[in-house]
Image 1: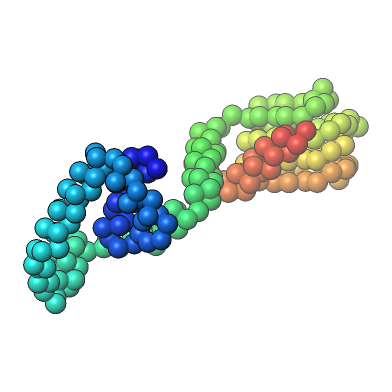
Image 2: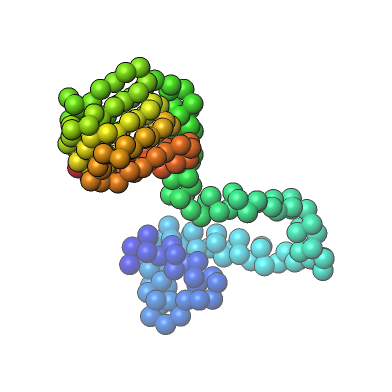
Amino acid sequence: MNCKEALPLMHEYLDGDLTGPEALRLKEHLLQCTACRALFQQLEHTDAIVRSLPSPAVPADLTQRIMAGLPPARKRSSWSEWVRRHPAVSVAIVFALVMLGSFMSMWNDDHELMVKGNDLQDVIIQGDTVIVPKGHTVKGNLVVQRGKLEVEGDVAGNLTVIDGSLNLASTAHISGQVTQVDEAVSWVWYKINEFFSNLSK
């Protein structure tokens, strides 16, 4: 046994926890090592002094006094607790609110006519009016924003009018869906759908 192994065994011996072969090995080491024997005698002396001290009287209400001295526990609002437990959902909600705010500002700020589609060569634009003439076909989707759309011919795709008016003549033929978006909330929903459809392409 070396001195490093002997030190923890000395403490166990003084606590009364060391018995059997380990106690015998410690005694053998102390007989051979004068440094460890001197240290053990100092530990024995210190242990005897500590044991001879009178134990202080503990008041019966000590626990209550300690607990009363602690600051009161802060009540957390249920909203902050929910945010702590669901960080990903909280970030998604903040993102959605920011996107909604930006879409709403775009809805209010933009007043210009916008025409979007893959095949616009047969489309006539006069001021804020977009006309699909009779006998002509627009191939693909047609989107008109903040304008009047008059369809007399054919649209081989979806037709969307945002914040504007739509007039379909009796000669008009639309092969896809016709969607009119007149409110900001509907426009936001349309923009979200458009964003995700562009991602999937």
